[in-house]
Length: 151
Image (tube, rainbow, N blue to C red):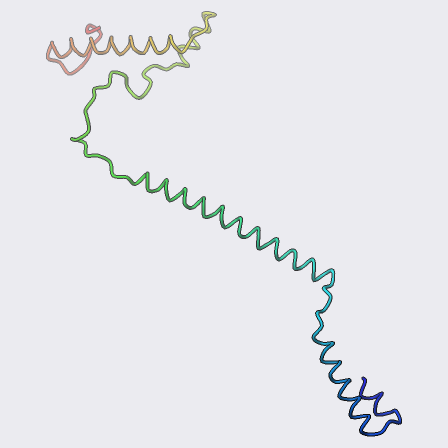
């Protein structure tokens, strides 16, 4: 653009060459100046920075989650001791409930009574004791079937 203005003016050729060199130098300097960031470019840059921060935070959370999962997996896979090395304890209370608590509760509600958990536990203990006595009598009589007369 500057070159066209120089060539059309009535200036000597040496002056034109000098002006052309200055114009070329100035255009080179102008192209090196930092460009002003537009609002759109600024928003895009900020969004990219925020996304990078979120990605880093998410990666950290994911790594923590995976480390916890690995820890749980390792704890689950620990070798169990051999059966013969474990102390043998005879359990008096079975793992499962022997009585049907809802049936007993319904029966007591029909009689206009409430039932406590303590009552149900005690009833279950008494039931186990009665069954143990019946087992003992059955074995004393050299039988494998418990009968009503064993109670």
